Image 1 (tube, one colour):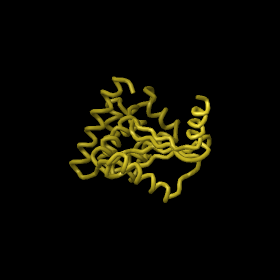
Image 2 (cartoon, rainbow, N blue to C red):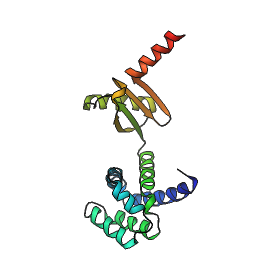
Image 3 (spheres, one colour):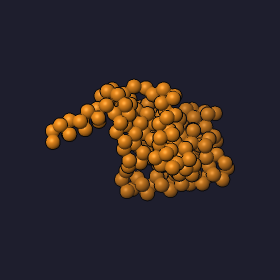
Image 4 (cartoon, rainbow, N blue to C red):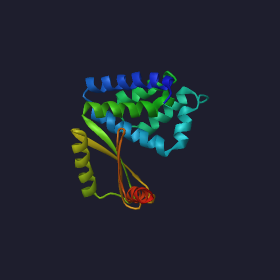
Length: 181
């Protein structure tokens, strides 16, 4: 993220968090923002439409009204309209991600990014959640999973700047390094 983007993203995310806290909507906004981010991630077309400076603000607002419908709190919808009015809607993804960072801080939650060769069962996710809690002393853990068949087996856990490589590929690489010495 560039410094300029950071200067725009931080204040908007903080303002949204203040609004959410004042109305007791931090979790509701969090869930709605996660859905919006997922939508942007899965639709390059929507992202390009919102980011395009040539498209008129009222057209962007109409599309945002349509996709948010009744699923989004009116206060959050107004915030999206404000971003369009101020020419800041292209920072929506960054603002949304930063809001989630603030929400995790507020809830003493850490984000664990887990990469595995195969989808994890609920029991495996629960075990990893407990391990991450013990590792970080966090009150709760939010898990984001990615599949990478090249790992062969096991998992890689990333929490902040800490990485625990418990993948089969990682173990084989370590064995290879020991044999090479």
